[in-house]
Image (cartoon, rainbow, N blue to C red; front, side):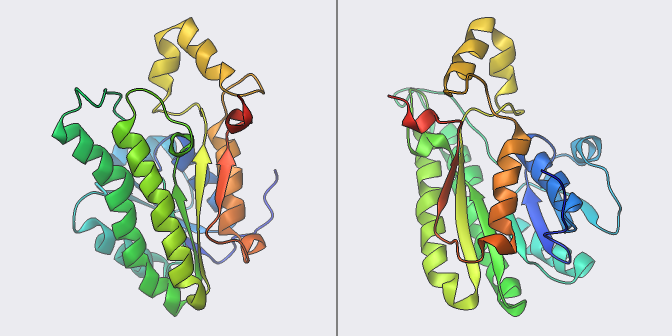
Length: 252
């Protein structure tokens, strides 16, 4: 997919932007003419993963779970680029642990990163988007909100929550011309899944086998779907979940 300036003049915040899907989204948005505030825990990793015109790209190290993060990030986007049009909540963590053995700490951390931080940043983004006459919110859910497996109690619960939150935002924010949608990636080769892939040939084969296409997805393939939802082409799409899984959900 070639760049066509579909986000020209738009300002976006992308969390979890140092690697994987977030990095692919930031790169694609920049190529489409957006100004991007890229967020991740490590400034060094952001610098390693992203490069671009400093007039269009601002790297911000932040823990999205902190109480001050939403205000800090949105204010930084407004100060640096003049407003906010697009929010992509991509930052996430997963901890594979059975429900019986899962600690309160692992449960809470998973919920905090994957759901509570998403809610807080969405809440803070509403006012500046409303002032701009509209906006786009794209939240990352997961195929595990549709089909789950052992060890994913906290992760699946959080990603289910993202869907409920996003659908509610779509209803509440429609009158302000702000759309809210979510994406459910399947098995994608990212920093989160790479250790599993590299652990054994059997694990790689299993992950490739999730999709009828016979391979894992690439971050850029998810970024293409997010680009659509963030663009004017999706102006009448809201409260929708875009599944990007190579057909996994359809498998029996």
